Image 1 (cartoon, rainbow, N blue to C red):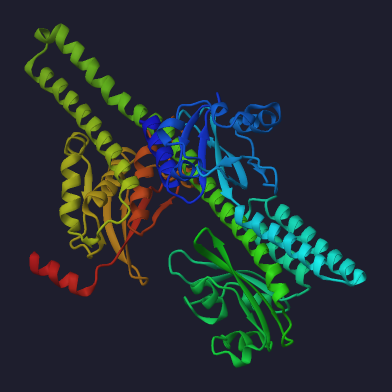
Image 2 (cartoon, one colour; image 1 turned 180 degrees about the horizontal axis):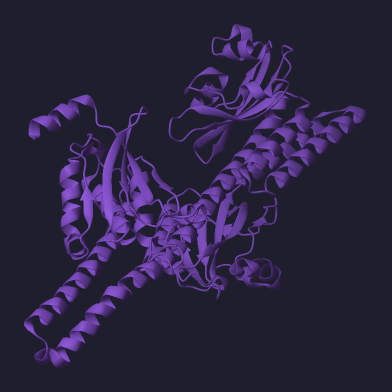
Length: 574
């Protein structure tokens, strides 16, 4: 069960990466291509079916040279990501287009857990930075043209020195931005490079919220940065919104004369802004954010400043996109690891719970098969009842396993008014053998308040709580059920037993996934209470426990109260 789930989750990650506008491929430890997305197929002209299953040396022989083997081998042991930066005339991953031209590439290699959870694959993420290289090459051409057209040798020297410094800053900025995969660190690096390039102290980065389309200020510099951080602008609002919506850069010499100016900035910060320079942060044809610099002096920025900021914005966009992608992969990897651990613990707990009743069934069945003629009708009936009870227990455990699996798959459950009396009655029928055998005394309220939930899940919550109260109650067990309406719009349902109670330390461990308390005193809480907690949280409620040694325990859960009209409808139905 675990391996199948892992495979599906790994496949879902690769399926998500199949149509992203970046090159992605996966290598096994023996350097065989396991995944080759459509973007690489388009770049190289090599179809997916021809690449997958082929040794990488048949496509890019230099990747198996000692230089790259030494850097990539730790990846197959789960090591940290490796970043290869593109250079203008030398490509780490030389992607040859079908038309015979090359692309400049920036490559990140990260460890990806294999389905068996025993080894790692190498995940290559290749970003096309040809446009950035073209920007830098274009800049070099501008420098050369300036050099050729300038007659004054001294001025030529000064301009060349300035251009060289700017080019060096751009190169250093590109290297700095590709040196980290942490999004916050990338944003800080971008604004630090802006300060060095333009000498400004007021700048900000706004990223597009993929859910709402709003622009959110994720990082800022300046005396009132704390006011701006976290601001949200509607799509198209202000200079930032206009830049993001149109994908065009802005150079404004006097913002007061421009109707696009969002005056809330001046009012909230107390600063009077005059000059603004905004460039879009673009990945392929998608704007992911805006880089903006501001100043209180009019006409502070020039076309040369804009020409300097745009390639920095292109580099920043790539770094931001890479950091976001790596963060997504980290989250999915963490989810996979947590799911694997949970599945292992779940399998152990389920096997432990099934082992007991199965042992009873097999033992009594063998006994009857060998010597059934020696037993009286009453003894035969007794043993058959024990077999039936054990079978019912196994059926209940299997139902819980299926229910737990369904809570993983179903995210949006319709909440309906619950007929709680009928749900509790159904639980009592499921526990009828146990209740009759040990003479359990169950006290119910005369009337139940109406709550919202999902009846099959809520029945399972009651089943686990009542079953535990019977197992850990006194002799005979006395179990009391009730409900309390709270002022916050929720109803607290509870089950109280007359058992030995639990220590504070045991209470803390109760709802941890698939854990068990001291086996000398407790028969087993793990699987059931883990299911209870997951169900109640899925329904928007909380679980609780109140217990004192020698005073019994009260287990509770909360559900949202049904609206008044639903309550009247429930009364009509009854």
